[in-house]
Length: 162
Image 1: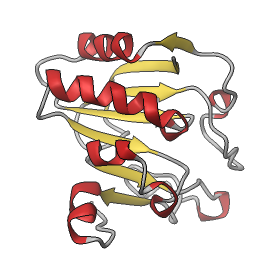
Image 2 (image 1 turned 60 degrees about the horizontal axis):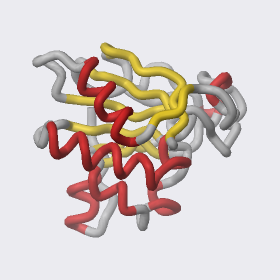
Image 3 (image 1 turned 30 degrees about the vertical axis):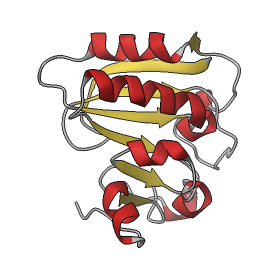
Image 4 (image 1 turned 90 degrees about the vertical axis):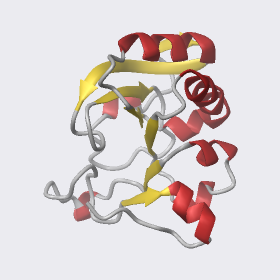
C-alpha cells in the first residue's frame, strides 16, 4: 500500500507544464527547512493500492494534462509501489511525461528499477544554506534536474537546463 498525502489536479511550480502532482507521505531525510514538514512522518495520508492511485491520477487529468509529478515526502521511499503505479499510467497514457522529486542523490538510487520509467529526476536533499528561490523547480542550489533517459543512455548525468 502506498501512503499519499495529497493529489493536486493542477500545478505549474512542480515541473514544466500544467501538471498533476502526487504528494507522497513519508520521508526519511528530515532536511532542515523542509517546505513539506507535515509530509515527513510515514504515518498519516491516505492508503492506496497502485491500481487505486493510478485510477485517481487519471481521473484528475484533463485532455491538456500530459505531465505529472511525484513529490513528497519522498516518492522513492516507496519505490517498488511507485514503479507499479507508473507502469499502469504508462499503459494507459504512454506519452505521459513524469517528473519525480527525491532527497536522495541519483548516485544513491540509480539502481532502482523505477528510475527507468521516469523522465526527469530532481535529486538531492534540500540544504537550507543553499536555498535559492530564483532557481526553477527546486529549492536549493545543490539539487539537480536530471534527464534520466539521456543519463542512462550515455552513462553520464545529463542535467536539464531551464
